[in-house]
Image (cartoon, rainbow, N blue to C red; front, top):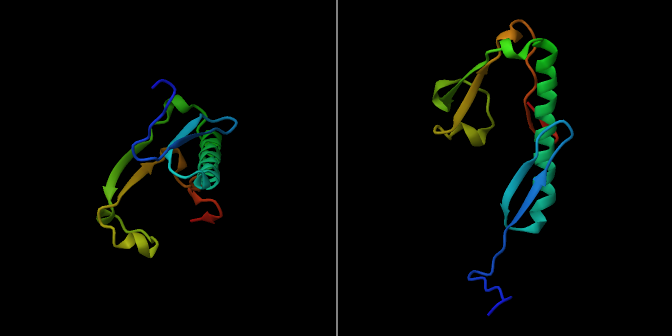
Length: 120
């Protein structure tokens, strides 16, 4: 019949768009419960603001972004020695991306924010 929707598993999913002034829009897809939306939106907005903060710090140091050639390498947790929370220490298959910021030699690198209310 036209106009009727039959959901086989009777579940719906929702998408949420998050954007911050000066950044790009990000879509969080497939949220199963609407009660999760505030926290997911808050965490993504916090992450976006942190990235914009880091971008600003980098642009203060790197006057000509076209000349900047950062490099990165993905490594396993076995290859690096980091002080990680206990729940990560047993995860030997976890991958970490290491970024070389050549213009930051001798300077403090931009902070990496782990989440709302926490800082490493």
